[in-house]
Image 1 (cartoon, helix red, strand yellow):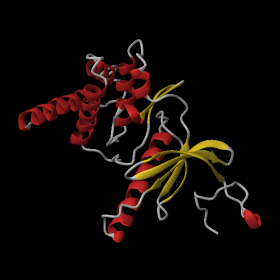
Image 2 (cartoon, one colour; image 1 turned 90 degrees about the vertical axis):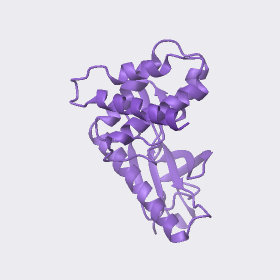
Image 3 (tube, one colour; image 1 turned 30 degrees about the vertical axis):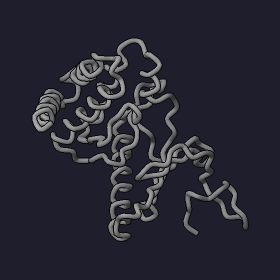
Length: 228
């Protein structure tokens, strides 16, 4: 019998065993439902794609499968290369779900709203560079999708990410973050400058051209201002 992430207990009726035990619904969004729980006794997060009623069922299923597969591949690459990220534990492309390790800590959103001291935005820039240096874009970068863990800032939710990102996609990550910081953290006017400072630190450490990404971000900002 195939594993279903909605199974309500580790040991099911009739002796059927499931490695997933749900605890609580964390978030129900437009694209996915996120549930905390445990995977073989280990704290974990289940993310299950939500069907969109306005889409044709075949298209909806195709998009769901593609995005789960892409997110799984992104996490797998980050895990293999030692980049700070959730650990991929299990996934089912056909059923549209993925299970990853739980990252403990507050969101960067709540940390900044609580008046975080120091240059935490610099650390955010470093974390983003570590992702980009692997050819990966995030696709939905906000302070809500960053966890302040004991090991550093961990970016989460790669549902709209790209495994083979173009320069434009990397620049758009910075632009999305800039819009988020401007809209939700206006009390920290130097936040984006600090992000870029962290992003450009140690430019020769990974062979990645971070300056080209920052230049593309500035180009995107200019285009947006012009069309606005």
